[in-house]
Length: 186
Image (tube, rainbow, N blue to C red; front, side, top):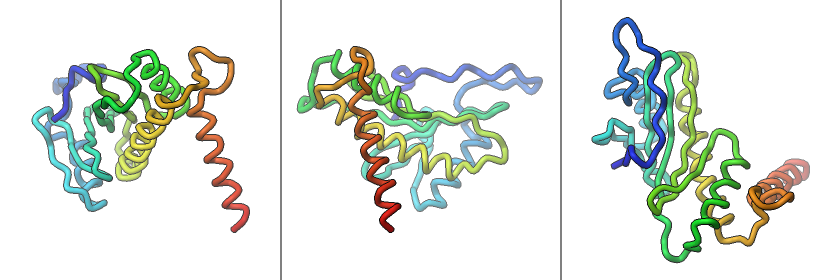
């Protein structure tokens, strides 16, 4: 079940002559495309009480909120409780969330009521490949969770209080360099 109060909402689309509501689409076109895409990838998605599409990947519960309109909007998101084995210093948690948000495109991280919230959002046109968007954004969200854990347990540097790149950006740069070297050796 999702908690809409812990997530910022999309702005409602401009009023249409047919009367668009701006609320998550209950039986909307984008939601159907998302359900079809997830089923095509072997997932068993469901629509929860909030109208969000829910599915599990790698044991993690994720959601897709769909808002029909011109353009349609899609948010892939998840929530993770911040457990006691992680630093409980809210400043350190916020610095880690800031570092991840600044280091990644599309994905945003934040904290709400003791939870890490990670979202990836897209404007979706009629011809867009929804399956590819859902698949890539799912991986970005899960990667962001891992990066947040690395950042919250490190001593920095952090973008907010250092002139050096955040530790998250350094980790990503090292991984990209390793991938490039692997590609050259093949």
